[in-house]
Image 1: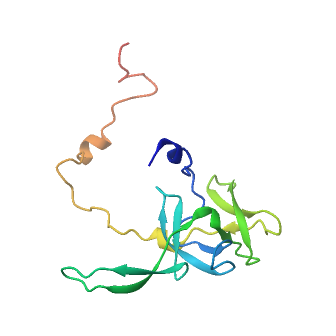
Image 2: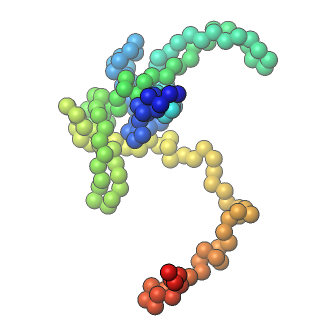
Image 3: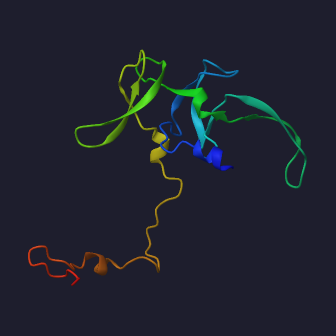
Length: 159
């Protein structure tokens, strides 16, 4: 990737894996589907069952060859999130609720302004968190040890 292409990468993604989107350009225009994969390095997404292309695969060790139908990536500008209330494509905005949590809201012409829920698939971890203590983990006694007292200033380094 050249430096020009790297400048055009999206840094703050508003479309997530598991979102319900509508394709607004291309051969599948007007169809809705769920995002299967997000390719952030190319600004592309793969929508389940959409943008199907024929791929010719040569036979090799361990797999057969032939012509297969696969889902090709779409550029992120060619899809829009579906408003959960109206069912129409909409832009995505960010709002903060009273308790300080950040949520996505639908915005644009004809949008309801409702909260777009975070996809359930993102709440499931693919690799479980480690439960056993490893050799690089800090012992719990050292973590809970109090090394600074705010009232007396004990524990502050002398600068």
